[in-house]
Every structure is written in C-alpha cells, then in structure tokens.
Amino acid sequence: MKSDQVASGAMKLSIVMPVYNDAETLEAITARVWASDPGMEKELIIVDDGSTDDRPELVGHRNLL
Picture (cartoon, helix red, strand yellow):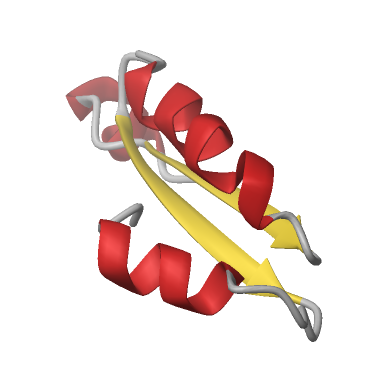
C-alpha cells in the first residue's frame, strides 16, 4: 500500500467469505459485516463453493451485497 493512500484514509477493507450450504445463517452474518465500522470503506466478497441450498437466491433477492 502506498503511503499517500494511508495518509488520505483511502484504505479499503476487503472481506472474503467462503460459503457452502449456509442459507440459514447468511443473512445474519452479512448484517454483522455491514453493521461493523472498521473506519474505512469495506467490501464483502461472497464465494460459493457449490451450494445446493437456496443461498444464491437469498443473496440475489434480499440484496445482501
């Protein structure tokens, strides 16, 4: 990271969350991520590992991202 990014506060926190058949807990987990305040911009990257539950529909229809 460049020192001018740190000085200007332009740091960004990237959270990578692997998921597999976790539709029951996904909404609560993502809500906690968005409610946290790390003091910088953040992004949540959800990586599905071939889930067979309704996780894809949950993320798309509930705007968890």
